Length: 211
Image (tube, rainbow, N blue to C red):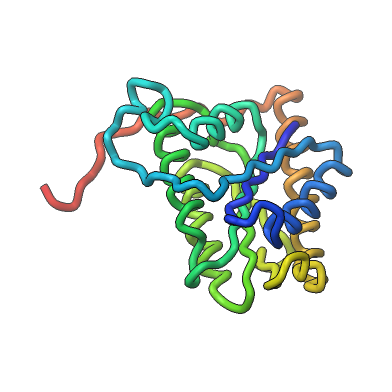
């Protein structure tokens, strides 16, 4: 089993990376493989709503988003971490997730459905709650069980590695990682016992509020 860890910070080896490293250590100790996917500093174009992914099976813009969705098809869980910029997730990670989830849904790919997911916000001071809410919405619209820790998944720090001083925050993401591992093992045990996931239901016609 494998969990994808998304680093949504423009700083490849900053506090967000440090937090994900602690998550990876805990998951690995539970026998779960991990990979840290760095969104990067290059501009990530937002979703254009063109619908081309329905025919192509991928986003029409061929960049890191398609690399990520290809990897996610082979992964069993997802954790997205972002620093807080203006009381929200980074612009790049929001554009990244918007296209990754939209193209995965439109292409009919079972990329995310019933795979456990979690969000982590790395903040200097405030805005962590709104950041978590933003990221979690991608999961809850995709039938992804949201895994929690013992507290909200906030870790505080400003300069590199300062998050390690937030001992409660680091402990909480380690608890989150253990809960993720437990859920994955329970899911695998259920499948081994012949307990199948619910069948995917075909969408009915969208109900628009203005007709």
